[in-house]
Image 1 (cartoon, rainbow, N blue to C red):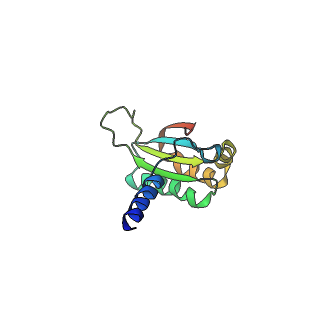
Image 2: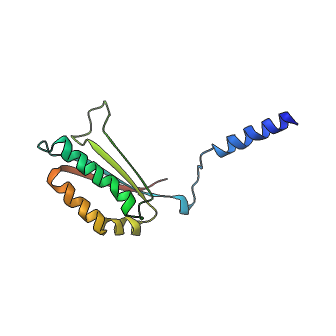
Image 3: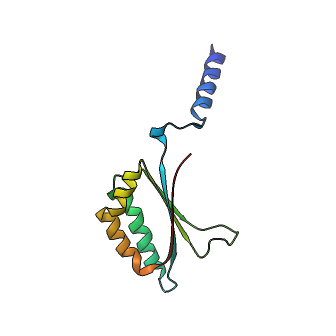
Length: 127
């Protein structure tokens, strides 16, 4: 009996750790990838202010389903000066569109503008 319980536990654990290879429509997410290069004249404190303001949007705008960010660490040297990547997920195109004009996002852009040298944005549906 003990061996059966152990095998059953292993099987359940294995099944629960198996990634979903074919997500349903309701599980697919729209990824909004934003890459920044800050002005050379922007101080580390200025950049931190922008980082914090972007991160705060997750708590202010419920359309955001997931959020993460980080700084470039690639050894390839192909980042074209872009140093920060912000990754925001949405459930629909409409949610992303509403996010872009949301007052809290518009206010964030005002914090960003004086420090932004270059930006690249790519949106895609995760497959």
